[in-house]
Length: 143
Image (cartoon, rainbow, N blue to C red; front, top):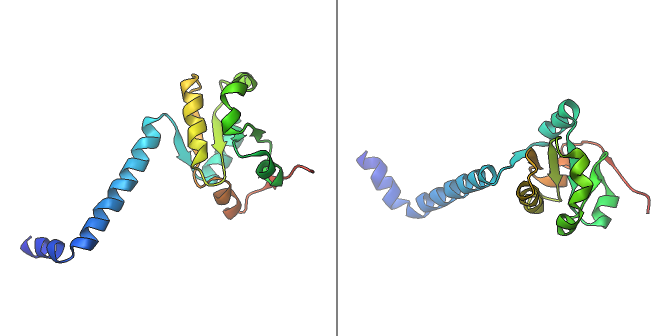
């Protein structure tokens, strides 16, 4: 035990960095679950679409959506979400998966949906970059 404490003291920068990274990971995990939504991998999203008829909502801007989005995804930019919530009413009982470029902006949309009483909400971890990285299909809108 004394050797371990000596190591921690001798390598205080490394020890501090480890603790900071560990805390950041813990906070990230707890934040998502406490806000009422969960991150999913691209493979988990595919399973949710196939097994539970999940509704995919792309919250990116129009140009990014047209350039390539998940097949059958609804386009609802996060900035317009509250004003256009009525468009989601027919799907209220189905699970929702929100998608943005990297996964960060979609979290704001998840919070908005949760506040409006939508229950089963997920976010694509890593966003469209992860989807494309997994070599999954996208569809494009002709300009």
